[in-house]
Image 1: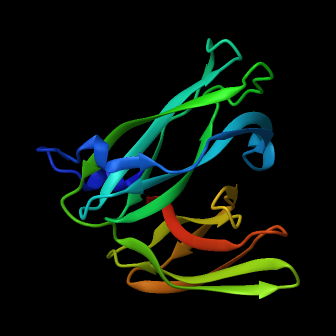
Image 2: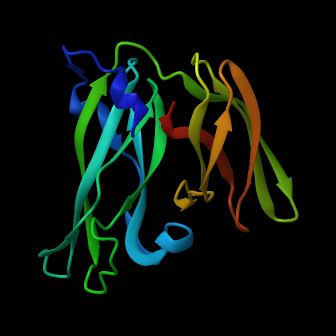
Length: 204
């Protein structure tokens, strides 16, 4: 369940889609996605989207995988993330069937929607710090749960190279009591120049 979606009222407000800009080139990758019994190899892309408005929004990206002639060989599973105003987030768009697409040569990324909720999400990360450690980047932050109930919170790190290309996007699930905080930390692979942390899906 994407708790962010539950924040919307019956009268849904939308942000102008032109305010959402995909800011990084979508480079195809094929690797293991998922964890445990759900782990399998699939084709995916990491791509950044920036919200150029002053208003935060729940932004959904999708798109297609295409071969060398431009023919569609797969669809991406849409992903929704909260992007504050004048901020950006890194998306991991995975093949809808979680399959390998050896014929894929490019990706078409589409901004499917940008919904303005009635209030900001109750889970957030602040006090983000970057540290270097033996050629790797360590990023630390504090997760806040401002809800009246305990929350299962997906916490995502996004690491970029010096040219701002997304390198990796690890995540973890943390359970945070109501009106409480929890420290989190992620370590990059060698070569990362910048890192940040943000919240993904939440359930309460």
